Image (cartoon, rainbow, N blue to C red; front, side):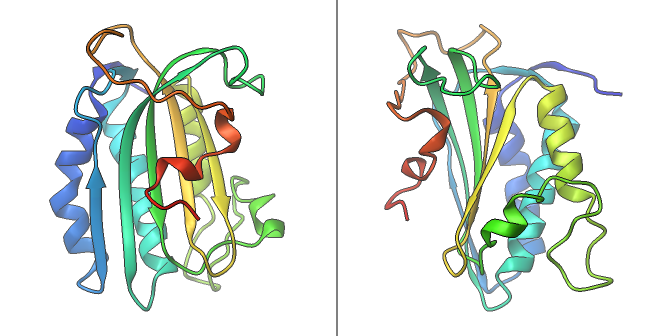
Length: 193
């Protein structure tokens, strides 16, 4: 059972930062880019940590020859025009993105990526429950998650979690407005793809 409370995603990311660096190994660079005045969200901090851990370990597995794991937070304000799908209503969101420079996921696999027991890993290497669990946690927190990937170019999982109305008000927090809604998630990473 989730135990939501008002939290700052940056605090959760910071708590996992050192542990992730040990878990992913020396061949993978970990880059953290947190919005300084990030809007707070209402979620279970332990479960959000589980999301970060799960996505980071999947990223590690996709980068057997090394690479970069980037964890990013940002404020995103969606207008009616930006909210191009029913799951993303207009409003203030704290974005949490986990990006890797690994092997990527083909379009066929992406269509099933959040299904229970679906895995792209070798037999015995994954249960196929990790991303289904991540999806459940994000949705129970009132958010949405998107996967964007191409073979050979890495993968980005981007979550939009509704702002709680506390912390960093519109006058004190920078707002990134996207004219492309959730469909253009690449722009949240320097250089895009």
